[in-house]
Length: 290
Ligand SMILES: Nc1ncnc2c1ncn2[C@@H]1O[C@H](COP(=O)(O)OP(=O)(O)OP(=O)(O)O)[C@@H](O)[C@H]1O
Ligand SMILES: [Mg+2]
Image 1 (cartoon, rainbow, N blue to C red):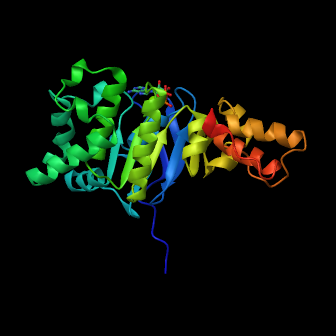
Image 2: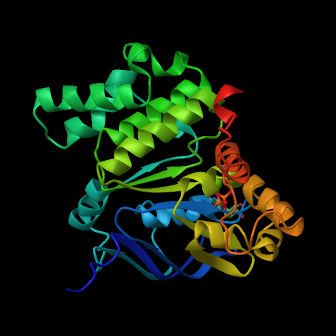
């Protein structure tokens, strides 16, 4: 049996805005089905540009975009095929929301797919519930808070049930509860088989949530398992990214001879707690009590 090709993939992609310098050059970026991929990089490194190339909003100046292994044609048919597979939630919700109410906005995409009214209603209800904004269904989008608008924009993409959900800094501006709700919603989508790509500045979130990381640095795009990439402090320094909390703690524990070589570093306080509990057999973890 041959492995199926990535759902979407940029091959040798280069891009420059009109009259601007090259933003991306010779980028290879594969999104295999079922993965959770965090895209990291400092301001202006090209994350948004890369996500727009991947979702067809921008077209590569060189190289190609493949969907299920076949090059995407930028005609009506090709773009429809791409957009029913891949949904992008843009960085600024005000660039995405336009309908009078939240429910109308979220229903727009599914209605455009020509789905029966009942199916549209069901999808909208589920997407609103997943983002914890059911109570906002009838509210005018322009009267919502920033975090609420952000969730409404994500709900609109979720209602399309894409195979690949791409989000540009979805947690920026969300409060801690909102972030956890979003991660819960994403976990539910992933259980249903949705592939998720997320641009973020939050290295701790990336380490905890993603399987793979893609890191834009001045040397280009580096991809790999998230713990390996975010454990490479030289690479993080070159990309001017902060070190994740977990790898810093793990490094300290190792330096003090507490964490054996080869033992995984904690990614969350809860993982640190579970590890600490193993040092004292019989002692329960404490993080649930704090
Ligand atoms: N429409 C545009 N026209 C010209 N240059 C642009 C345009 N959009 C972005 N750029 C430039 O392209 C580069 C990459 O921008 P991009 O928005 O992809 O970065 P980013 O990694 O998403 O940054 P941030 O973390 O601030 O969102 C930047 O130097 C930016 O100034
Ligand atoms: Mg951006």
